[in-house]
Length: 341
Image (cartoon, rainbow, N blue to C red; front, side, top):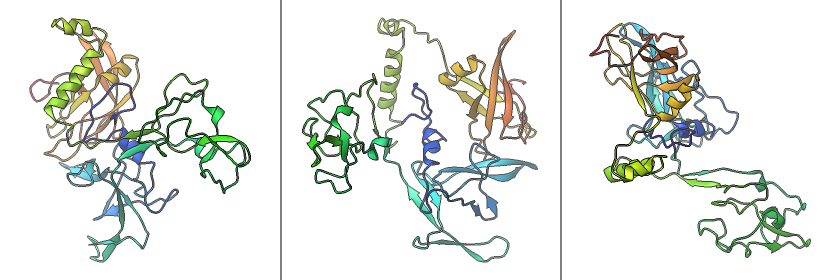
């Protein structure tokens, strides 16, 4: 699954990405509408990127942030659940059926109970109104199947082949059944991809596998992806002639300036975000993690043209205004550890 909501593949494995945004809409065992702030060891959990927003732990997440003091300055420190398992999402629950974990309160010493459910996403399924659409008013008892309620005319044509992973395994055409009230209907369940629908000139896919990331850093796979990316460019013919290839948009690496204690953060801007910056848009980006100090920053940045190249500006840092709590207030084109900025 792509790490960002864009047509360009962006590798964000191990970081906050589109998958996290989707999982944040899925409730744990308390269901929709539940609101459960999470306080552990005296620390209140906040949203990972919207740093001023208290995290609703009733919905699944794998990243969060807490208040911390770094070198005497108050800031937010990002944390990840699941230890080394980057695929694990966690939601808090109050359901008594869930076995609790018990930890002492740091102030009173009283044992407090925490209950959690866990999720590992395997497949992404987009639901449609077809599941509930019943234009022929077919009754609940339906001898040919409760979900066979869609008029067969809904689809423009029926190919003979269907993916074996589809719900009932039948080929199109075999899938059309006559209900006792005389209506010819087909299934409204979940398919890999729909047959052609009149007025829609594209393939609609409903189910997407989410393969594990165990091979994500495999050198052969990475080279294959790089070759695929280059062959998809407009100037791929130059590549095939073994000539130097220049792409129109390249990723950019910049840095924050030094904080009050001298540390900085690298900022990697992929080509999709570079394109957005070129339009004058403000983009949101997460700095690289500073392992020594245990934190990173959520930045909103813009870009303008200057006499010596592009000028990047911090619009907001951690919902704290144009300056981070630890002193970052501008962006450097080169590493400030080696070059004054």
